Structure formats: C-alpha cells, structure tokens
Amino acid sequence: MPATSPAHHQRRRRRTNRLLATAAGVLTAGALAAAALPGSASAGENHGDKGESHHPGRYQDVQLLSFNDLHGNLEPPSGSSGRVTELQPDGTTKTVDAGGVEYLATHLREAREGNRYSVTAAGGDMVGASPLISGLFHDEPTIEALNKLDLDVTSVGNHEFDEGAAELGRLQNGGCHPTEGCYTDEKFQGADFPYLAANVLDEKTKRPVLKPYWVWKKQGVKVGFIGVTLEGTPNIVSAEGVKGLAFKDEVETINKYAKELQRQGVKSIVALIHEGGFPASSSYNYDCDSPGAGDGISGPIADIAKNVSPQVDALVTGHTHNAYVCTIPDPAGKPRMVTSAASFGRLYTDTTLTYDRATGDIARTAVKSANHVVTRDVPKAPDMTRLIDKWNTLAAPIGSRPIGYISGDIVRDGTESPLGDLIADAQLAHGRSLDAETDLALMNPGGIRASLTYAAAAGEGDGVVTFAEGFTVQPFANTVNLQDFTGAQVIQALKEQVSGPNAAAPKILQISSGLTYTLDLTKTGADRVVTDSIRLNGSAIDPAATYRVATNSFLAGGGDGFPTLGEGTNDLVGLDDLAALEQYLTANSTATSPIAPPKADRITIVQ
Image (cartoon, rainbow, N blue to C red; front, top):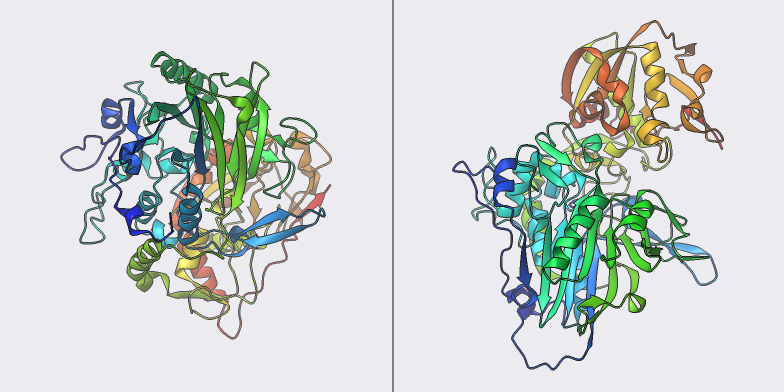
C-alpha cells in the first residue's frame, strides 16, 4: 500500500501482553512475572484482516521483516553511524547514507505491499543508549514510533534493562513515568507489541519477567516466536538495572520453549536472539555463505546457531550491530537462516518463510533472505515526521544549547578513537576538580554511542556541539567515580581488555592523556598488552604504588568484563559523565578557538 495511505494507520490493533500495574503505577520484576502468561495474537487482529475470501493452497509464503538495535534513533543517525557499506558488482565498495524512522516506515510499508502474510519482528535493543529526542523522555517516543511501524514482536536486549525491570514493564504497558510524570496531555499507552524475555527470570519466582514466546496466526498459518537476550547481560548493564533478575543460557531456553510450542501444535518457530556475530566483511550485502555455509561469520551466534534445536526454523539476531544473512547448519546438519540488520534502523531484513500447511512447518529449503538499505531517497512517512516534530519541540529548549566547539569531526571509530581520548581527558579533568591527585581516566568504548560531527545538524552552525549531540554520545547518565588502585591492579585492568570475557572480542579502554602502552595483536590473551610498555607521564607504572583513577560508574562496578575495576577503594562520586564532557568542552573551546580532534596516538598497536 502507499506509504501515506490513511487506511494503513487506521487498522485495528490488539494490545498484547497487558500486565497488571501496582497502585503506584510501577511494576516490580515480581509483578511482571506473576502476570507474564504465554499467549498468542491473531495477525488478523494485528493487521486488520477483513476476512476476505481466500482459498489457500498447500504452501504459503510468509514474509518476515526484521530489524534490531534501533536504540531510539528516530532521526537519521549522523556520521558513520548513518552509513552502510555496499559491495559493488566489480568488487569495490561504496557507502550509502541510511536510517531514520521516516524512511524506515516507508521502506517497511512498501515491502509489505502485495504480501498478505507479513509479520514484523525485532531482535532487541529498540531502546536505550538513545539520542536526546528519545532518551530525554525515557524512550516513550521510540515506543510510539514502533507502534506506528506496526512492529508485531521483539525480544528484549540488554539495553531494555538500562533502567530496570519496572521501567521495561512501563514501556510495555504504558503509564506516566513514576518520577517525571507525563510529558504530554496524553497518557503514554505503552507498546502495542509484546516484548519477549524467555531467559530473563525473576530470582524469587523463577518465572520469566515477560512473555517467553508469542504466536502469530493468520488463516491457519501459525508461526511461534521465542525471544531471549544474551546470557551475559548482567556483565554489560548496571547492577541496578538487573537487580533481582537471573539471565539463563540462550540455547537451553530456546530449546525448552521450542518443545512447549511443539506441544501446542506450533511447528514453525523463529528465535529472536539479542546476541550476534562478527561477519567476514563490513559490507551488508556480502555472500556470508562463501565458500561454505556460515563460513563468513564467527562469534557467539555461530555457536548458538549450531546448538539451537532443529525445531527452530530461523534466527533473527542482533547486539553486535553487524549485518549478515547466513545459513548455519543446525544440530541435524540442515541449513538454517541466521540474520542481523546492523543497527540504528539503517537496514531491514526481508525473509521469505515457506509454510507447509500439510505439516505446519517451514520448508527450510525454500527459505530466502536479504538485507535491504533504508535509503533516504524515498518519501518520508508523514506520521513519523509529525511524531519527530512533536518530540523535538519538547526537547528543543534543552537540546539546542551549545556546550562547545570543534574544528572537525571527532569520531568514535578505531581501536583508540579521537572521541575516546577526548572523553577520557574530560573525565580526568573532572576527577582533578574533585581531587587534584587524580592520575588517569579510563572510558569503556561501548559507552560512546556516536561521533561528534562538525557539520551543523539542526541549524546550530558548523562546529557547534549542542547538548543534544553530547547526549547522543553519552546517554547513560553514568557518574564519574574516583577510586584508588595499586599499580598492579591498573596493569591487570588493562590486560582484562583482551583476556577473560574479553578475550574473543577485546574491549579496548579509551585512555586519558599521559597514559601510553603497546597493544601487540600478534600475541594472544593478556600478553597482547605489553606490560613493560605501560607508562604514565613517561614513567613505568609501579605495581606497589597507589593511583587515583577516574572511570564511569559502570566500569567502577566491574562492568564490561573488568572485574578489577570493581575492586577500587576510597570512592568519590562526581557529576554524570555528560556533565563532565560539557564542562571540558566549555572550558577548552570557543567559537574562535575550537577543539581539534585528538590524534589518538596513546596506544601503539602492533598487528
């Protein structure tokens, strides 16, 4: 149907997964679990089926549209976050501007045209780490946008727990924010789609905090969806966000509920898994199965895919922000589709599942899938434009305020990034304002969500950094914490970048000025950090000396696989990390003397 068809937006939808709220309007994890009963919804109810005459044959193609890791990016992402790499027929590559829900809505609506059996699913992290337009309002704008996109179902991701289970319950069920109230005259209605959290249990009740699965139905066709997030979620979310929750093994959980769906007569099953892999190519359209099935992808999802029950017919994944469409053999040796659509709404995946009415199962040999770019050369969806305008109007007085000036793009790309250096320096400066003895600062790369771009984004002028842009870079409201560590602990923390939980996928901390060392990627494990190369202001780190270290509160809690950083002493808590960045930019830049991009030359990399 046309992207602007009024009828499209008037379709009746049934709210699924309505859970009971407490009198105060806040849901606890226990209250969520008590009401989280497995259920199904009719696609006719979800998509306005008029009951037209239709005589189905044995085989029915079901269109599965999917995306993942939107992270509240309603407006087109800036810089490299708003581009994808496309492989050309001659073997060269080019970049394409992509993303923005005004365009995503148009692409999805056009993709659905002519497909009477179409379901839209997502792989988690729809919210969290969001730009100001969504994050300032606790991601209510993103839920509203997803409702308008006619999302049918999504798994939870780790970022759905950034503000805890009670807030996730509010996003599902609606209601005003418990402390900030309602942002508009209309009460927030919550999600029209179910969040699935099969492997997230209330520690007391041992039950899932939200539905474990959901069944899509239309004229005799039934497809079950099981949703899980990565088992390691507690390692990458603040302790407060996962308090009272237990995260179980992805494979065991999916296999458990696949059996339950089979007992209910649902034989076509899709797993929505917020865990992903690392493709062999950065191009979204590379051949993942060349030279053989699954050869073009590695990482956690490859192992998961090889062990998930053959009863599951396809895996929609996420988390790593990568793009791939692969077949990976299931435990029975049969090919099975595994997909991911990068992040930030830049891609969507269109998968054709051929449903056999005689068996109730998917004919795996007929499954086809491809990623498509959410290009910006299509008409904007007017309803999304109105939504963005509404929330931007509310955010503008806060977001448009200048906080600094830069002379060029300061990007977050690279093992050590210019923006990582800038943020670490800002936290060191803030630390020294609290305690002059602060020696160094460490910043986790995952906490840096976007680059700072020189070009004006909203009429503020080239080189001007607005509060909204700063918020997009650091949206978590982590505090800057000071702690004492021995030199031996500092060395150990640096080695944890490439060992333990981070051995397979290193997390290289961004470091403040004065700290230098060599990262030798020709070695393995902790040896990749060359111990005798670690210097602070030119002097070797003394294992027995005490160092005052600034980190954000997430790292100070041992997050991201850095347990040693959770062992500091003599804690002192400062302002939030965005305030520290604002203070640094304001103190060190003016319109006539902007900050230049740091050189990112503190870590010497040997490859």
